[in-house]
Image (cartoon, rainbow, N blue to C red; front, side, top):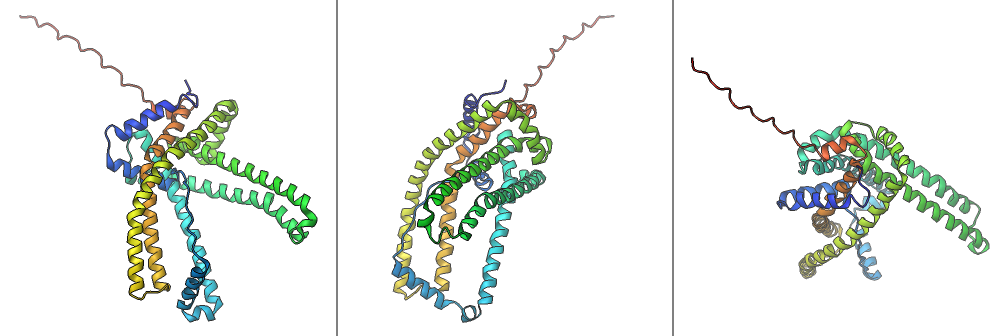
Length: 357
């Protein structure tokens, strides 16, 4: 029988406990942390802002500009080309990460089904499905961008053309009403895109993994199920939001404590390095800024991975939760998640009596 959104919680918890703690394997936690981070399953946390005094910031900027080669400052075309090159490189890295996260999504699915995380084997097996999911994400991103441009960008452009922003006091009422309307449209679009993303990774990815379907075909088969059980799937989305908030608060507190403990020695080393650099007569130039950026990226990467390691229970629980909910509604998933026990062997017959001649 299909499990409700509430009934699916306990078996998901039990599976996560068995896979992570019975027995505890440090290597499995490391691999699951990496897969969860690269697949996008890791929840986002808060941040902190560091305010730098304006005079120091301006002085550092002037020193940085003075350290640049004079050819860049005297030839704006070269500077524009470098900015364009950086934009292309960033966009390429974004596409590469989207493809990587698509493959890792199937590796995470296999890790829950098999109760074992095997990244190398999963990468060899799931490149085709990952490419299909990557194509779906590209199309969905393009549609989302188009919807935001048409429904939000065009009204803002029209308001700018009519001069509403130049004289806002004269158009205060339409600006307020239009702002409220655009904000509600933005929330509706963002919510719709979030629901599509969640249902794709929770209910379409299992179909793609088990039947080699495309994402579009998976959605075509999923939609009748959703329409036939609106209350059940709506309850699932609502319960997942509640669980995500609870898990985010709990893991966020633990992560914050661990990050503070890690930043204390890192901060001490940073202070010593800065004081030593000032004593040696170092100033902020292209090389020292590059060194600081590299060191900062290393520390940031370390902190992100530590947070991912602490999030491993959630990384495993939420896919298991969606699979236990969906398995009763999708027979191929039920067969691999709840395999039937092997048939008992027939009782052996006693040996036939031997008659003496």
